[in-house]
Amino acid sequence: MRQVPAVALLLLLLLLRFGTQEAEALIACGSPRMLNRMVGGQDALEGEWPWQVSIQRNGSHFCGGSLITERWVLTAAHCFSNTSETSLYQVLLGVRQLVKPGPHAMYARVKRVKSNPLYQGMASSADVALVELEAPVTFNNYILPVCVPDPSVVFETGMNCWVAGWGSPSEQDHLPNPRILQKLAVPIIDTPKCNLLYSKDSESSFQPKTIKDDMLCAGFAEGKKDACKGDSGGPLVCLVGQSWLQAGVISWGEGCARQNRPGVYIRVTSHHNWIHRIIPELQFQRASSGGQKRDPRGQQPLSRNFAPFLAAHAILLVLMALLTFL
Image 1 (cartoon, rainbow, N blue to C red):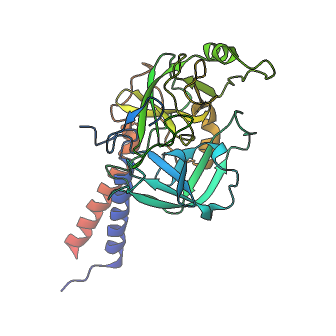
Image 2 (image 1 turned 180 degrees about the horizontal axis):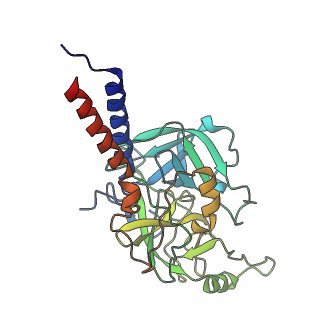
């Protein structure tokens, strides 16, 4: 009986490694597979927002977040007053409801939390944080990453986007059991109009809040529909082409769904460099020459996506040749 030489076994292991990595890499971000109460929101469908996560402290939900790679979650800096006590936190993925979350639920332990060093407190700029999980998660129909846009992507005024979360349905109430994920469509509001809205009916003794350059407003001047307490850190996502891109991170607002007080989000594109420094392997989604036109699956150019396939194919050919001559 012929023995397989060590070099052949090594090549086989390399082939399996390339195959596994490429299977992970080819999973398109921002593409839910399962498409068949925030204030004024409605129940989300199972698997509709597979990047949505619940960040929990001592087992209780307190903030939302979005899965952007198999190891990293994007959320708001104000969710973490203490980033060193990681043992207090866990991340719940793959669920639609928080009570009896079901068979697709996965709990992940937190390795570290990186808050943007420019963040200076509530309603300030740079209210973003990255949460690294202790172990990479396995993508499936209920756990998938959202696409992260690079600065070439522009989210136009009036564009209808979506926000989701397990936060309170009003300033006074809690989301009733089984605490089903709520979703809400909100249009983007341009910054001058948002500053004008926040200047209306302001307390005379208080300086009106200013919408900074790295902030984005979305919602309704008349109020009635908005994110609320417990939604913080969750994603504002917009459908560009056939993929969902994260435009913002839920940051702050005055109350919930009040008139002339739309929700304020941190622009993800404004913090591209900071995110890239911490996660250099993250593939950011660029805008194509058409502004909104992109590859239908939101993937990188073929030359980048298929390089590992070509390498694996070459290894397979060498392995077959070796085995033939044994």
